[in-house]
Image (cartoon, rainbow, N blue to C red):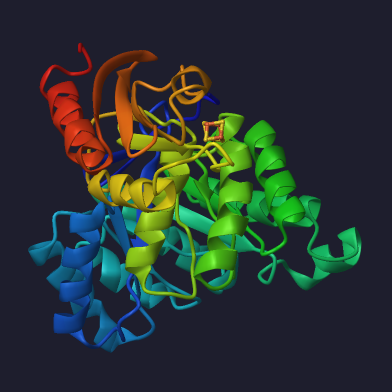
Length: 354
Ligand code: SF4
């Protein structure tokens, strides 16, 4: 795991060895406060740890205060270009500002935002993406390459440093996975600030999940990345589900149950696909870390899933439940799910000491 300095977003630590925090962004029009509060509550209940809201104009600033009052999540104000909106969002209680200092019109304005954030001890995320790289850098590097993005980030960070501000988080998003991954890797070598990972314009739910899983997953596997946002052209609730699935697949501690299931073959004699879906549904909100196997046959299943903590394997109209590869019960097919859930409850109760 790459060690970075740690910043605090409200009560949530980012970087410095803290757990990877899932974040999302509200998609309801900024002036619809009731609608935004409803969406924020649903996202929080689903597992979102940090919530970001766009602040496109002054009329949107009251949303920041309303979110602060009604949700338990730290609130990030997303500002483009207008430093006065950043100052107002800070005054309204934002826990973090997302703004690019190079785009707000000069050192005085950068210092004003930096001072306001320093006073309240709130971080700023510099959010470089391939579309925001300065023209001169595009010309120098031949396009929005990873190097151009990192150079752009260096400029923004330097402007903040010159304004005595170091409480920064950085993102370098691109919709091109190779560029995104290379940019984050270069940034991880060059800067010590925590990294907010994401693939921008990743696409609709299926495409976006695949791209995000590859981009974010590859970096997290190498210990790079401190907070993640999966961007989907979909309901943000799907972003939280996708982010949780990515962290679960990576075996990140504290993300709950991970399912392993076999692809079925000519030996399968039970409705394994149906059973795997039922197990997945039943485990969606299961918080205890464990690996659960759903295998098609008792001959190979328990052995193939030996590294699983618990599992089921099908027979002919029946099946077995196993704990760490050891068969503990044989039951009819229709009893497989309830029996597995009973063992899972016991697993949860004993904290894995079955
Ligand atoms: Fe086939 Fe059994 Fe392997 Fe599943 S566990 S793929 S049913 S051999």
